[in-house]
Amino acid sequence: MALNLLKSGHKVVAYDVMDSSTEPVAEAGAEIVSSPSEVAKNAKRIITMLPNSSHVQQVYLGNNGILESIQPGSVCIDSSTIDPAVSQDVAKQSEQKSAKYLDAPVSGGVGAAQAGTLTFMVGGEKEDFDIAAKILDHVGKNVVHCGSVGTGQAAKICNNMLLGISMIGVSEAMNLGTKLGLDPKILAGIINTSSGRCWSSDTYNPVPGVLPGVPSSNNYQGGFGTALMTKDLGLAQQAASATNSLTPMGSSALQIYRMLCEKGFDQKDFSSVFQFLSEQQ
Image (cartoon, rainbow, N blue to C red):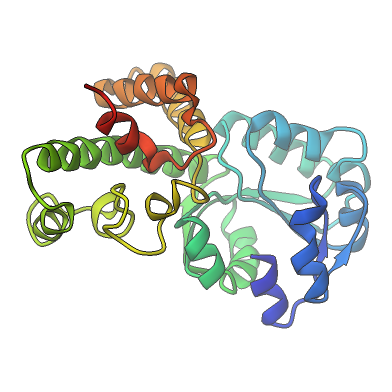
């Protein structure tokens, strides 16, 4: 995302706890600073993307955090996938600093981030969304205003619950088919031109060798980690409990991904559920 902003002519001031993450953008011309607070001192349009709610709270509200030195009139765009209530709380505290905060989680994965074709689900006031969209249009293909702060997170949680369910379903079908003697490429081709077609099969197939350039064909390295999928499915179940929404398949998906983490798949891509299933006797 930062590289695409640089390519579109924006000045980028960046920070990450991992120096290796900032090296490519530094080489492309970004200024690297020593803390989130330093970013806020040097920029009024701020994009963050962090693993979970506690990280967002630390980066925005903690020592050397963004709100410690944020400039009045700044617009913060948080592309983390977190609890909607945390987004709403950070938005309120940003407002007290005369700044705006929008939740804008993304979908599309590493490939879409590199290609600048991400989908952004944005929650915030319409006038703030219009400001944010002018920036996000340089790193995404679909920038959607979902409503007030927190609704972007709601949309992402629903999407990722469905994604986790569908990946398990595709993995079960592909595992069954191959054990019945079908060539996985032939089976995938049939599914992808039939009623079972979905993104988890035609774009991100979990079987090694079916598609090039996806994690399953790279020993499940890269992509979207199993631990992160487990976290998102947990957020979905929290939301389901809070709204009395029945989500039996979402609950089952969470239990399966928790088991994968316990079995050592936590750092592998979430499509590694196929590998787990195929190894069971």
